[in-house]
Picture: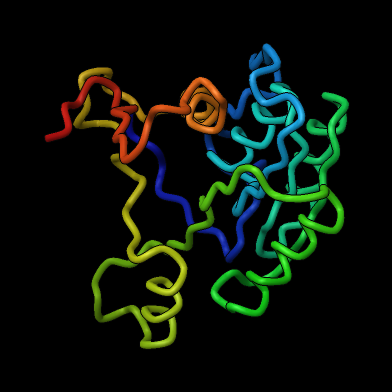
Amino acid sequence: MNFAAQQQTVPGVQSEMNPVPDCGENSYRGTGRLTGKKAIITGGDSGIGRAVAIAFAREGADVLISYLNEDEDARDVARHVEGAGRTCVLVPGDLSDPEHCRAVVDRAVQELGGVDILVNNAAYQMLRKSLDEISDEEWDYTFRLNIGAYSVESFGDNVPLGRAGQPVELAPIYVLLASDDASYISGARVAVTGGRPIL
């Protein structure tokens, strides 16, 4: 499946993506696996982070969503979290700033009563044709936040399923790893790869 080349200004708007990612808004059904847990999800306003926030809430967790500054997307996720009867705290800001990172944790402790789960999902990527187009500032910022970027135009073409995965297809793994069912799992690599082996 080839996606059309798309570029948005940072932080981007999920609803303007083509196709709009499926984050489980209408399909994910929880079973109470995270009842009473409190989670911080960075980059929880879109993509995988959005799917994880929705899944965690439907599994019974309260969530704090840290995001850059796409308030409309974040409020939409909060609507889904609160629709599941859970608390959602929205904290915009730049996670490449260590002071902001500390403030995120402080807000979770104050407003959720603690932190049981931390999902480090925030990332930064911009489409560039060559390394020459990346300024030193952008290079440094990218590495500070997520240590690399990749192209999405052909993402999923090289897997046996022949398509990119949707965020909702990854969220159940996050739920498993955050649940008590994973109490004996450590250092695991889970191959959510559309059938492509990882070695």
